[in-house]
Image (cartoon, rainbow, N blue to C red; front, top):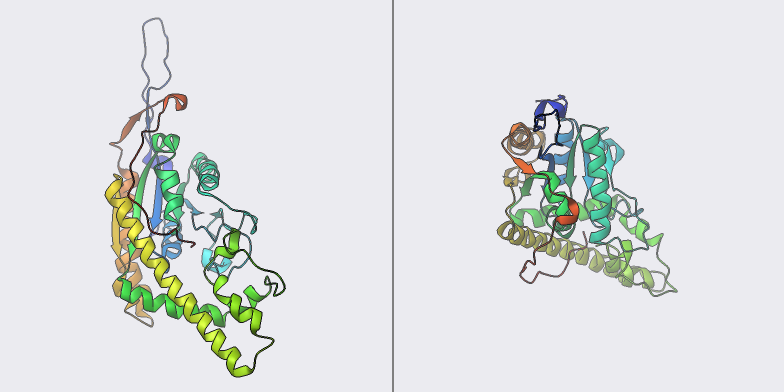
Length: 327
């Protein structure tokens, strides 16, 4: 199912008020522009779904993964490849200095600009990634964004035990693809690394520190043992990350009045071989396409135009969150 229609087809003309004497007031009502978010724990297929949707609608993808926003470590941060992008434009992917701290405020500023640019070109912004603090900063903490855009959230969910198994196998594939060498290339054994800054916070970097500091001075058996321990730690921390991200999604869903649709992709992860793609389209991409199509066609939501300087943020009490995720 492919949709190449211009988003103009989904929009309505803004009403105007005419007074005697020919005075034409500026529009006092406007249709909110549409934005789609694809959320979910690490490993659930958010990037794949975002790209699938962007090949079915006139859309572009905006990355909201905390580590993928940095330049470098493409394997460690699991960035989509050029082939996987299938020609779909991606934004905020590998744009930040790896030594800097790209904060939620930084993301909100850059994402707002990118979303506006995409909408101006009559295309649909699809914001995809697992960094829920970035999503919250944009969708809830930015009053101007809330006034201008109507959001649809697609939550890709996978049963945690199944997801744990998948992300552990994914770590093995990343190691085979060169993860160790990628981290080694940026590692200095003569210098203490600060793993609380920039891209070095990414899961896969601090876990290899002990191995990389000792690989040249220990025997082969010990070297293998240290490497296995590091890989096991990467898997453990990735599973913990998935759990924290899922908890955060549940909290945000209960706190905010989000237009959220849960897509259960568990059966796809229990399948192998050629059936995977068919089941993905049937259970994930297909239903998501229908949801987005309905969302774009819904013209009932009209919001008053409010001058940005008059918008005041109300204090919101948020329950204590788990330790912040790094991916």
